[in-house]
Image (cartoon, rainbow, N blue to C red; front, top):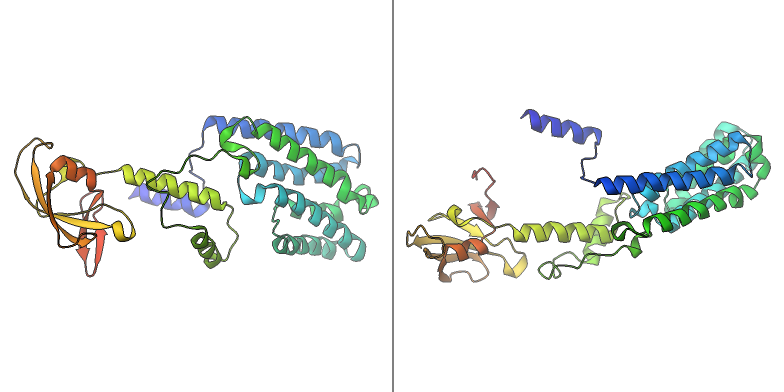
Length: 317
């Protein structure tokens, strides 16, 4: 139980435990270095040190997204470009139209969030870009609407170009996400129950922005399903009188109960007699070797009220 409490505590604080390779971490680190170095050099040509520091700060946040999460919806080109430019435009307008600096700053960030939502270009660093237009000091404010073009648009173009170049050599993380080389879909999962329409419906029911693309969701589903399909019960685990499921979906789902066995210790020779008690082929009976039956069976199940439940790894129902 201490391990369970530790896992619960880590989940509560949001500690990310997803395994990521060292190569992925190194590429992200190098990409961030190149992108920000180029932006610092460019920003210094257009604004003073204070303004440049604030602008680079927002681009630093973009660098985290583009190089550490290159396939996230928040990291894609339209969110990057639209998020920064729209936020810069909102920020400059608030700085010019609202004389009270605190109100102007709050309005800039909040209106930028709303605009990014409606224009489908949510990019969190855009909030910092809007804020910098208000609190960036005399150097930034002197630029006026030029701030949108130089340095914001120029910096966006630089970091976008760096993201394209740095991620290009690596098939698994090419940017934008549409250029990533997709793994072939396994034939066993190609006809799975999840469609585009089902994903759109599920995401609309969540009613909150989720930073994972539809394609990545499908890849995750495919990998999990393929691994699940490859997992089977060992021949020694097949027991007389117990029930087993093939773990498939829809009309192919089936439950078999072992009703007799020849008793041989050789799984390739020991014959088992089973009857189908639920799903595809219900009421049918059949004969197979214990080895063949174990290749069909995904896991043991038990009946609870009107539902079939999977027996957990410890063998408890």
